[in-house]
Structure formats: C-alpha cells, structure tokens
Length: 275
Image (cartoon, rainbow, N blue to C red; front, side, top):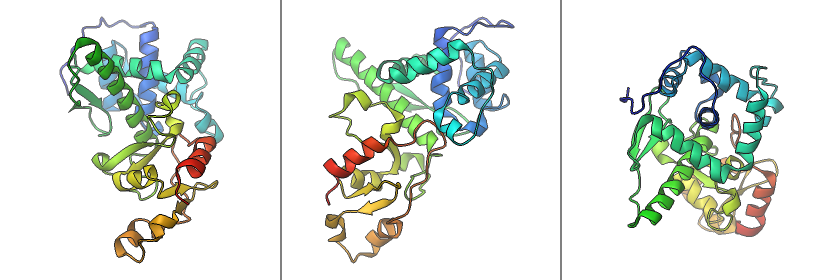
C-alpha cells in the first residue's frame, strides 16, 4: 500500500462533509458495482485515508447506486438509505461535472500524494497506482490550469473505462494502456460535455482513432457501422479482423453512469462519420 500523506483523526461517527461526499461520488465512478463491499482493499485503503470506516464508505457507495439512472433502468436498486444530502450532491455533481469532476479528483488525489505530477490510477482492481502526469507548461497560472485539466481528464478516463469493465466496447481488448476514453462529441469543440461520461466510449487505441476520424460510427441500436472510405481499403485481413467482423454488432453497454447519449451519437453520425 502507498504511504499515507494526510493525517485525519478517526472517530466512531465521522460526519459526511461536502469533501467526503465528493470523494465518494468520484470513487463511485472508479469501482465496479460488485466491488462496493467493505472488505475490498481499495475501499479499506481510501476509507482509512478519509478517517472513516470501510463499512461507512461501502454503505455510501451502495446508497449512491440507488441514485444512478443506469442502475435503476436495469432493476438494480442499491441500498435504500440515500440521504437528502446524497440526492442533492448527486444532482449538483452531475450538473456541474466540468467543475466538480476535477475538484473531486483533486480531493481523491490528495489522499494518496501531494505530488501534482502524479495521477491516481484505480484501473488495477487490487491496488491503487500512481502514474506520471504529462509535464505542465511553465508559469504558475498556466501550471495550475494544466493541473485542473489533467485532473478532469483523469476523472473522465477512469470513470468511462470502469463503466465499460475496462474493456473496449467493440473488440473486448482489456489492457488499460491500450484503451482510450473516446469523446463522442469532440473535446475541443464541446467544452460543456468534456467530462460527461455519457459523452464517452471505452475504445482501443485503434478503434478510437477510427471513431475520431469518422471511419466508424454507431447506429440507433448501438451497432457498429463502417464508412465507405474504410471499406475502400478492403479486402484486407487486418481490417476484416479488426473491423469487418464487428460490423452490425452492438457494443458492450456500460454497467453504470456512462450509457452513451443518443443525441451525441446522432451528432457523430451526421457531422463526423464519413458516409
């Protein structure tokens, strides 16, 4: 386990502060639903750093599951003990992801390290890893802005990849370093949706490149569609293996939070896809 960098007094009943709620909301996106139990080493570790019991954090995550519309649609209720504070924070968090996503990521980050050149990675299910960050630009103002952007990107990537079971929703590739949280509406042109998990797909680097270039898209039934430009390179064993065999197949749906927004997919089909 990583050494603790904070000293938080323990108490039998620690109040759920706004900061703790934000950490829990962030962590909800980082762990699969089936791993919310109080014996999960990751929950035990994070709870200690928060100055809470593992049971308290586990119960909070299960209560948050009852507020997740994707879980509700699948008949998964979570625990029924969500408080009004939980409901208010859930709503505020998801209405203000561009602000509260990076803020919650920074709070979680600071439980593990004070080094802003490291990112906290939860994709290895049995432990937390500290990954190097991209270098910040010179100058304190630019550096702080860069840190906020990186925290937001880390929040988005980890949430999207975890929601899809850390596997490409088209090919099933499950190596984290080969996976991308791909934006449906481009990051550059749609800042409002940059951190919205419903604007993300977990794709392999190859399928991400094809999706961004408009060589593939998804239809109304979330089936894979190949563009005429991509078809122009057929026959090709490599393309047939990596693309043609998935044509018409529906993607693997996410387990929570990040079910793709149909309006975003329509935009991709009409504005980016190269028919």
